[in-house]
Every structure is written in structure tokens, then in C-alpha cells.
Image 1 (cartoon, rainbow, N blue to C red):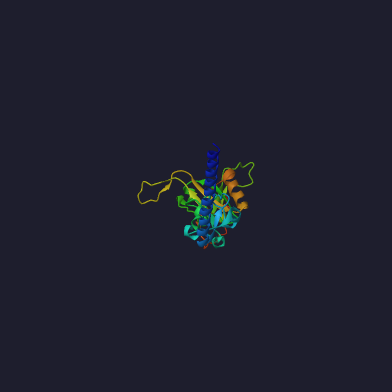
Image 2: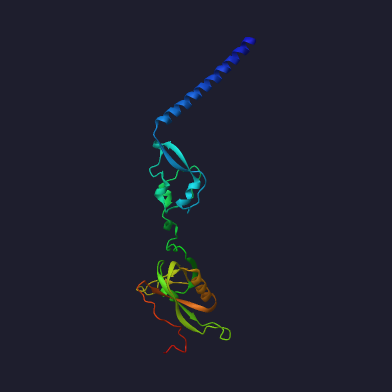
Length: 244
């Protein structure tokens, strides 16, 4: 009985020793193979990165890892400084290797039919009719003049008489949206069926004035302007000076 027990224990010890030796051999083989392979340092996502993050802010989300060159993707990023001015195009997950295809121009994130607002300007949207928006022919990137036409103010309380004036010049349009339907006349251009949503980019001061006029006192009419247009010496047109 004792001999059987001793034999069993000896067999168990030998089995354990064999497993340990085999594990060490396999680990050593992996280390030898890895050591002989040429490695490349790549950037790996260490914390989730939301889409739209500028490359200048990516440092805190990444870590550097050395991996065998044989498994490195063709467009892997090894130097983030080469991609200044770009943003992350999609959400990045932890463990993902940073690829150049993930870094895009910021304008690519802008909705179709829109352009980004210049730095320092604010965007806001007003709803106008087709006739107020040059027959609905506006497009993102156009610059417009805005005519403000006062007519619905209470004469007893208002300090502005009914009239029309070219108040704002070269206002940038960043987006135009509206439902367009074809005209009965095949030679005519399609026109918006309902309201046209026009988004402007202006200073905060001009935004306040335009929104106030649209909300409380006036209708707005747009005209296409270019950099070559001269600022005409306009004045408020009322029933008193219309024929002058």
C-alpha cells in the first residue's frame, strides 16, 4: 500500500515538473522569436477617444507599444506630429492601434451642404420664404446682404418708423436647408416648398440684432453679395422719402 502511494506521489511530482519545464521552454521560444523579430513603436489607444477629438489633444489617450513589424498595418501612426490640424473621424476603442485613416480633415465632419463657421463667429438659423432668399438659390459659402423691413410695430410705442434698410453686409451663409419641389414650368428652377432654414455666421452683436428683428419687428430679405460689391450709401426708406 505504501509503495503504491509513494509511486503515485512520484508520478505527480514528475508530471508537475514536466509541465513547468514545458511552459518555460514555450515561453523562452516566444521570447527568442520576439527578440529576433524587428519591432516598431506604435501608438495604441489607452482610453476611449470620441470622434472629433483634435490630434493635438490625443496624447492623454494614447500609449506607446513595441510590436513586431510583421503585424503592423500599412498606415499605422508612429509620429502624431505629422498629423497636426486633423481630428479623429470615428470613436476609438481601448487597445486599438492608431491608424492614419482614422485622422481626417475637420471639414469632413461638417454636414453635407454646410461649411464650418470661421473662428470667433457664432452660428444661428432663421426661417425665411423662397422669395426672401433669392428664390431659394442660396448655398453654403455665399455672402449676403440683409435688408430689414419694419412694418408691424405699434406706432404708439415704437421708436422705429415703418421702412426698409440695408442693415447688414457680407454676412456668411454656412448652411441652407429646405424642401425643394420642381416647378410646373420645365425651364424654371425648382423652388423650396416651405420655409428655408438659413444659417448665418456673424459676430454676437450682429446676431443679437438680426434675431431681434426677425423675432419682434421685421421681415428679412437677402441679397447676394460678393467682395467686389460696393457698400452703397443707403438709408431707411419710408413712405415719406420713397419718391425722393
